[in-house]
Image 1 (cartoon, rainbow, N blue to C red):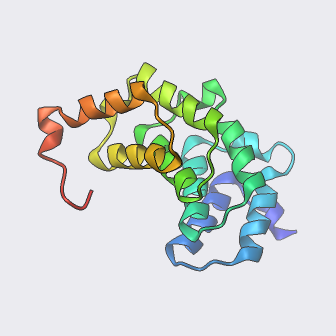
Image 2: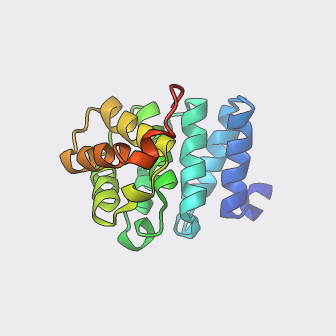
Length: 166
């Protein structure tokens, strides 16, 4: 069908558009999930498309376990994870927490990447808040990640950029 012509970013953008408008179309979201999980399509998703797609499902409250499991497996691939930004991993942590999907392997890989690759040092206030909130909401204590988030938060130039809304 028509959906088979969609490229990864088009899938992500369509999901995000519906989420942004608050239009929870279960049939569409199921079709997008099925397209995403079809054959080798998943392997073509880049970090931005992955983060956007995960965020869209979370924003709509659509808990598609099969899709989220497949996306988590794709995200933890080391070569792919190494290309994520702090914003990408923050969106992912927040989305999985919003959907209450506690994927230990995903969250451990994200935390390890954030700390070992010094990604935390590139985080903006909203990213730090989203990462901390995501791990806390899922009840996952990663001491190294939390220490890195605390240290980054206490950097003089970052403290002044935090606002009460973040």
